[in-house]
Image (cartoon, rainbow, N blue to C red; front, side, top):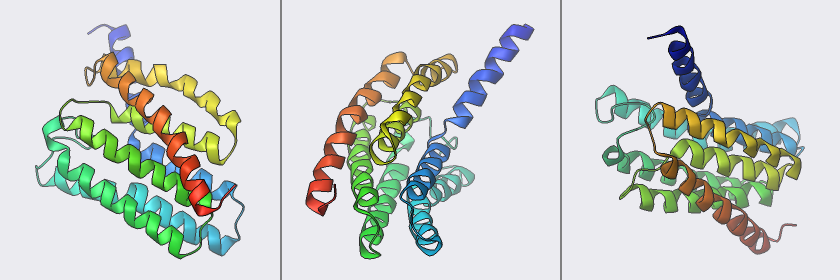
Length: 204
């Protein structure tokens, strides 16, 4: 392998690792909680619930499945192995949304949690028949969530999506179509569900 090929492979791997759904979800949750300006106690409570149920618990489940040989890698690249991780992630996220509502978290957090739940259910339905990129799905959904909850200025981060699509395609994890379709899906669902949930919750 030439030096250029080695560099390109390492770059694609680094981009894939940095855009891991677990990393992106946890970081997004932390930013959203921080932006809502709670007290230190509220920050700790809402942040712990959001990060724990949206990222940490799903990661622990996938890690356990990987260590026991039930999935081949942390990113669950094999489509047929995604059912259990998806169901576990959806149940965990649902519990997180319920807990946020119980502890009186801002409607923005509850509404975006509902949007992520709908996204997850839709993506689970698709990936049961056709492999799609969770990297591009989660990254686009999280950036849109930041644009809705924090500031629309953060939507500029969507410019990173082509780079992630390239990395996943270069590493032969997905075709371009398998990366683009989930982006289009969550781009439509996230704002629609969020705004609908905000009306139900009486938010702005």
